Image (cartoon, rainbow, N blue to C red; front, side, top):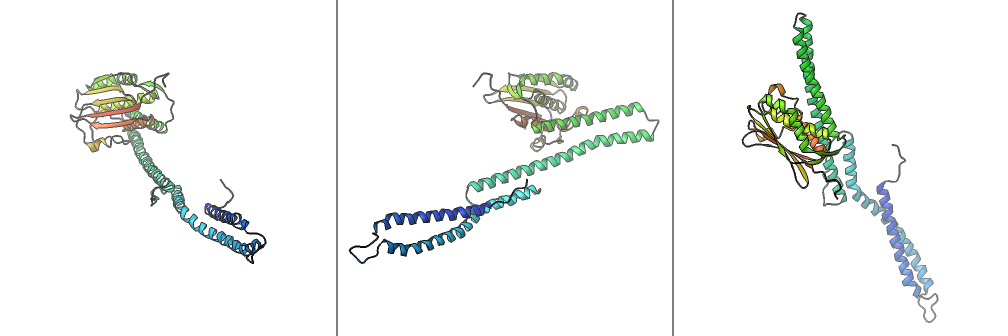
Length: 361
């Protein structure tokens, strides 16, 4: 938006300093007049000393010169002091312009003791660091998403090329393989949309009992668990929270599904528990399986990062399960914690704010 050019902050501060100095000088001269000259008579009756008129004549020009000196001194000194005071603001402005041009690696790193400018500079540096990390994450995510989406498209193109070059090829097998690849692409697209929705926090919130969510998710995935030879165990108490039932159901479903497909060897156990605490409700999903190294666990929340874990190949997923869980948890103001179990397997704990009882204070 175009605006008319006004006075600079430095000039305003300079005029303010000079004006304050002139006001102080004027008050000082007024004090001298009130408390000194008023007691000097206009005409000396009994001595040849100076009267008030003589003092005014002598004092007036000197007072005028003093006021001129104060004006010049105030303007020069004020300009210098304002420049010193606004120097940090200039650095912050330059950093803002660099950030606006796309350079997020620049930092102000303001020196000196803690004051308003230092707090502003530190807050701006923190914001730049978060923006840089967010942009890098988005770029990495976009690159990974493009790569993952390209794979089913390339497979589809290869299958169509084979069918075109070999008219006698079994069309039934071709259709079945195309259907499978297309289903993978649809699952990936839906996962990306869900992840974007959770990141934006664009959903309505309502009271949700996390124990009912866990029960529904385990019932839905019970056939998969039975087919995989995995035992599902569900326990816990009523866990009231506040959020989107659909997203929390997706969160729980992803966790249970992840625990089933990564539960190797067979005949494993998946435990789903809910609990309530004074300020939070907990959803804990544990699964038996192979031992995980700490560096592997630390990468599992990254999109498209499946770690080095083995999976049941017919239910491998698209590599976004735990990333979606993490985004949904953050969108609900919660905390997600992953830990490798000493005997093997993984424990995932979701901590969400507890919903205040209705009618409570």
